[in-house]
Length: 358
Image (cartoon, rainbow, N blue to C red; front, side):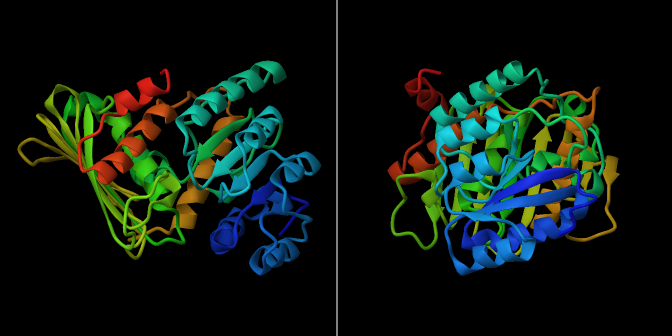
């Protein structure tokens, strides 16, 4: 990896399963980042990654952070990572690029508070997130270190299809039906990762569901006790406020990566995928669209595009923070989906939040 022209130092924490994906991302980022440390279980693939990058290797995440502090931490697994470790990284001002979400509502709340505290202590303002175009050379900040935070990638709301569209909220009005699907292989991300992204999209467009009814199918004999244990195919139906509905379909065992959104309202219909979109009025007339030249986009490319936009936002003094769903609300929807698949009954995200005192 090049180092002389690098703009931001990067440490990596991964497991053997995600080494290939991490390598793809680093190859696409090129000289915009400089890896300075690699961590994870001492297995052959991680040893080879550290050797290829010419980086020191650690099997202790906290030691990796303290010995090799960096502007960015690429986190492809939460094994061996504690909430206290993440608080340490945030306190150092690191941006944690996570390929898997936090799984505990309480941890999400505490880490959000830690980010606020870190920004106040260091005097660094958490700048916004909605400008810029793809390009590896701009993926990282060139000057002051970014304020500490966790960013789960690749978010659908940072995909070229979503970001190429003007905000259709005024034309759409209140959604009657929100349908989101996300599928791919186990080497891309976990089923939990896709579920988190799905509910993050739904909550970007509507309020918290009143109830969620979900089914899990696939290789597991029973629904696991925790979100990270989920695998297979999950379908969920949510009763939304004001009589609307949301349909979520996710799979980590369904071939090539694919994501798609359809929003139907009284006035219009909006169809979005990772690369483009179409907006029709109620009569079916095409109002606006963006049709990309390429037919598909890979998972690693989506991570790099999101990372690139993040880097541009961090260095921008004028960009506004995009509106997004609270991680606690997103996790409540994920937990309600898992619980419903286990109990066979509709479950309330609001009740799960109340159990956490939120």
